[in-house]
Length: 503
Image (cartoon, rainbow, N blue to C red; front, side, top):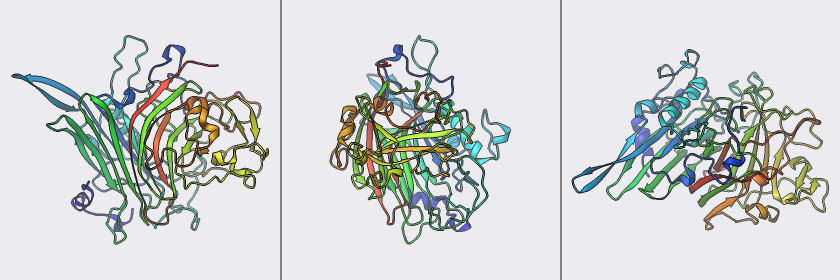
């Protein structure tokens, strides 16, 4: 990290304080689970909030070092609400499970359960710190059923899209590669562009009117410039005993940081979540499997983030190998699989009759009719923004596009959707502008049904993979903006509902 990026903590504080794979042991949908929630906090209604924070560089790692005085880029705000009588009145208090010292833990600092190999390795340290914070936040499921399904927290994910190709930090489809030059392909202002953010925490507090409120905010700019600074913020608020937590998000890009991502995720409570090769913690106490689940969420987009903002109403991630086997952490053969519904009406369909390489091989209708991409009379080209196959696939049918080989620890596959009438049966947006600015809605999406019919690559002659999803999230990826952009939105009522099996 370049010396020009360093800035005293106090200066940053003054600026900022204004206001995708499952292991065989994971639990998945069963008939006994039918009609119940897969998450520990259904609809975000639990007064005792559990929320985590994670920041990543371009390839879902930490990299060379942490931000000055910030510690490892993992944090949490978890508490229980308790009450006691004081005379004729009842007094409510928040009992926090995570201290600020816990949140500031960084490489070289020991905590319970830390392995010796992780002590001075920023990537391993962050992964193990997440597990430690999860242990402090964990909620034991209140049930007499076996096995128990404890859960930890909703996860706020922040990611920096800068990639210094001369750093040697990111593997290519899981394979370590030496530094290389790639002029103009990836944003990077020079040494230090893949840095971790300054992070500030406002621990949740309880006001006299019964409102609970807290948040995280920060910036990737370690030194303010005349061009302004990047900014991220997530504030959560709820009245005791009333409704859902409301998470208010803000994300600002700048010339130095034109590609930023901010999501609120429900991740697996153990095992490998979508996009990672580390054991994770999260909110999904039961992993949903296609076609047996729906997602309910309320979304209110206040500011879209400009034409490059790929705003995902829902983004689902998992991992399986090209032969259909579950992922096991081998980054050379694991493949992260994503399906993303982009609701920004300024996002075009790159898939077209003249751009078949940007389309999935086929489309399957709700009545299970298969339409191949070269059937120009029937294929719904405008329903797809972009499809790209795994970079380690050996049998992709030409023409094809392969996904960026560097932005995940392993190869990845993307199926990016756009609002279209063909998705109506699943409850997804059917026309441009649905769910966008001025159209706040509570959505009930048949994510399981749709994801069971999407095309994903698999080696010929292999057993179809079980589509078990380990991450579900909502948020935006502002994809290399050419000017400063700001996105703002609120999210609430998030739930993943298991439905009865149909196969």
